[in-house]
Amino acid sequence: MGKYLINTYGCQMNIHESEKVAGILQDYGFEETTEVNDADVIVFNTCCIREGAETKIFSNIGAVKPLKKKNKNLIVAVLGCMTQQKKTAENLKKKFPWIDIIIGTFNSDEFEKYFKKSFEEKQKSFEVFDKEFDIVENTKFFRTSGDNAWVNITYGCNNFCTYCIVPYVRGRERSRRSENIIKECENLVKEGYKQITLLGQNVNSYGNDREDEISFPMLCKKICQIEGDFRLKFMTSHPKDFSSELIDVIASEEKMSKVVHLPCQSGSNKILKLMNRSYTRENYLQRIEELKSKIPYVSLTSDFIVGFPYEEEEDFEQTKDLVEKVQYNSIFAFMYSKRSGTVAEKMENQVDLQVKRRRVNELLALQKEITAKKNEKLVGFVFDCLLQEKKDKKIMVSESGLSISLESYDGIEFSKYYKVAVTSVKGNKISGKIEKRK
Ligand code: 5AD
Ligand code: SF4
Image (cartoon, helix red, strand yellow):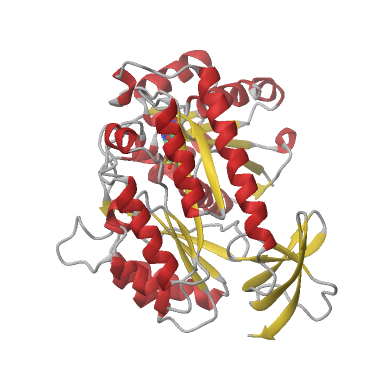
C-alpha cells in the first residue's frame, strides 16, 4: 500500500485543510507516514503570511527533488496560500518543473480531481483560479488533532489590514450555514471529541454576508446546547467586532472556553490607524476590562507585529505599556514582513531589520516576565484539564495550554475532563491535584 506525507505550514485553517487532503488520500488507500523516504505522495500545504514562511517552504520543496529520481511514482503536490499568488506559483513551476500538482486556495477543494489526474493518468496540473470557491459541504476529514476537532465557520476575509495578504489569497468572507455547522458539531460530540474549535479569519463577523443567518454569539450558544462534555473555542477574533453579547455568552455558557485570543497588533493609535485596524488602544483595553470583569478566570492571548512602517520608539513603548496593562497569559510577536500587493508594501519609512529584531526580543522578554509572575499566582486556581502524552510522559493540560503535573496518574483516563487544582509552582513546573471528577 502507498504512503503519504503532508507538510503543513501556517495557521489552524491550514492544519484543518490538510485533514481534508488526508481524508482524500486515505480514500485512495494511502496510509500516513512521517518518513519522507517512504512516501509515494508528498503534499506541501503552504502559507505566505510572512516572507520567512515562503523562503522555508521553497527550500523544503527543493529538498524533495532527489526523491523524485529514486521513486518514479512519487507524486508531489503544492497547494495553499503561497501558491494562490500567481507570480509565486509561476516561479515555483519554473524552479521545480518536476512538481506534479500546483494549485491555490481557491481550487484546493478540488484537490481530488487534480490528484486523480496525476495518479491515474500521470498528468501534471498547474491551475490557480482568480475567483474564490463556493462552500462545499459534507467533506470527509481525517482528523489529526487528538481530542480537538476543527470546524470551519467562515472562509476569507473582508478587513484588509494594510499589512495582511490573507484577503488576497483567501478571498472575500463567506459564512457556512449555521444548520450545517451545528450538525457537524453534533456529530463530533457523538464521536467523542472533547473540544471543538470554530475557525474563521474573523469569526466575529460570522453571518454578515447572509441576510438570514444568526450572529456569532448566537451560533456559539446553540452549539453549547449540544449535550455532552466538551469545550467550545474559536479563532481568530478581530477586536473591532468583539461584542459585549459575545463576552456575555463566554461568561454564561459553561461549555465556552475561557481562553480568548484577541490579536491587538500594536498598542499605538498611530500604528493601529496605519494598519487599518478600526479600533484604538482605548477601545481595545475597554474590551479587555469587560472580559476580565465578567469572566474571573479568563486567559488572554494576543498577536503583535513590531516594526510596522513608521513605528517609532514611542509607538513601541505604547505596545509594551499595553502588554503590561493587559497581563496576557501568552503572546505571539512577529517582525513586520512586507507582503506583495498589500497597502503597507508601498509605505515609506520601513523599519530596519536590527530594530525589528531588538523590539521583538524585548516584547517577548517582557511577556516572559509577566507569564512567570502570573504563574506564581496560580496556586489555588482550578482548571478543566485533559490527560495528554508529551514526550512519552503523561501530563494534564488545561484549556489555556498550561501543563500541570500530578503525583499519580492512576485511574486518570484520556478524553475525559478533570478539574485540577494547582498546588505549587516552582520555576516552570506547575503541580496540581484532582479536585473533582466531572
Ligand atoms: N508581517 C508580520 N506579521 C504578520 N501577521 C499577519 N501579517 C503579517 C505581516 N505582514 C501576523 C499578525 C496576525 C498573525 C496571524 O500573523 O499578527 O495576527
Ligand atoms: Fe493561514 Fe494566512 Fe498563512 Fe494562509 S497566509 S496559511 S490564511 S496564516
